[in-house]
Image (cartoon, rainbow, N blue to C red):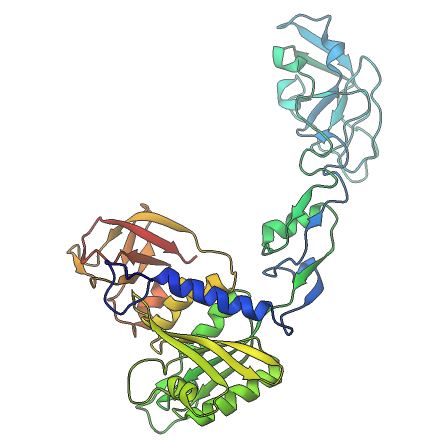
Length: 440
């Protein structure tokens, strides 16, 4: 592939790495041990991915109903009365939302509540606020009829009152029987679950989640909360950060490992965890750079290693070093995504590449003015897409948070957006407009 002249030498375009990850995960989904299908109730369906289309078995609403509290009538009964003149109609029984469908006597009107079925013979609703009644008296639980409701209806006739269908919700106006309510591949959000429930669907077929093993490498890393006399060692943020991000993307994290800088121990521990969980995916952090101690690289280079990885440097900061490939396991091949070891680099890589490969819902992207931290311009490396952490402001701008350093987890925690600085930009001026990925 021809080198993009805007990119630093030896770096590959972000789109190329993204495409490679899609192909890697596509191979897993096409394999014999790909995730299957499960049937779940709606109460457990949020965040799951549909495996087949769902069609509505009913009309919603099932019958025409009232859009307003008011009076149901037939507009033909208004014909003899000119516009602007008062008209009085006798009233029949009140219709509540829970009442069965009923009928309207010709030449009359019936009090009707919002959502109540339109009686046969009626074709419009006059809002109660537009009549002499003004508002309905409250009917108590013990009352069986209209109670203090008036015996007749008087209102001044207006042209809009003659409109057939006025304030009537037709049957099927929300959803018609046979409509496709949700399609295979859609992620079940609260809104979509509400729609499915509204058409009477109680269970859906979803794809089983991809099962992942998360690996944090480094002898210098210790478990949070672990008693440790060597207080120079750092706590493991990566495995918790990556696990949470993967779960947010719809992945089932089956194991979270912390392994030392020992390639053989790495392969043994990860292989055992993958077999136990019948994992589809390993996501590791660290061990992919050009240092003397890089256990992921070393594990892939060992003789007869079950791990086959390719390593690239992506034209991005942070998150340049990346690896991807397959681990041969007894239950089948397991995709391996090797991320950089610094926490911000790992997280940015997840957002920029991995979520897409896992078919997670895409983040919203907009172009917004960027506010620098001090108002002065800030540098950006030539030839690399710099990804800066930022916070969204109420005035539709974003403000950079922290510096570009890939170890600044505190600044990452304060951010709710990523600003993508193009490779040809070497300084970010206050007010410059750039693409922003929304993390909310």
